[in-house]
Image: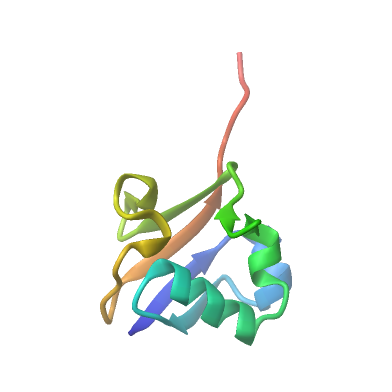
Length: 90
């Protein structure tokens, strides 16, 4: 499945672009594909096979934590956004 992936500035250092394309039937497969295309990609967002707790991934504006997480199914034309979690403030 061809998917558009939007990344923040931290990941842009790895991908060289704000938006890249990847393939996979699930979010986990997509991340592996991106890591193959952009070595070190998964290291920036995962540890021990799980997402870092401060990384949010959205499938068409839905948080994958409330779907099937890394097993969330993808289809052609989907958009994935990978964002750091925001915290702090007063």
